[in-house]
Length: 73
Image (cartoon, rainbow, N blue to C red):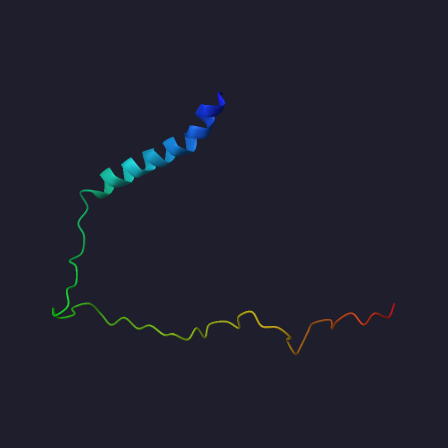
């Protein structure tokens, strides 16, 4: 396979995906857009700025399974 054709292959694939996405999504119904001043008819959306799920990436855990290497062999 010639090198220029091989290098243009990703561009062709991206173009095909873009065209298919455009034509397949063209006829779909979209939800009505909310405008300021209109009543909110959807359910409550609750967001929190604090992520309390899991323990995150902490340094220096107190209980290390198997302890650490002491340097004595």
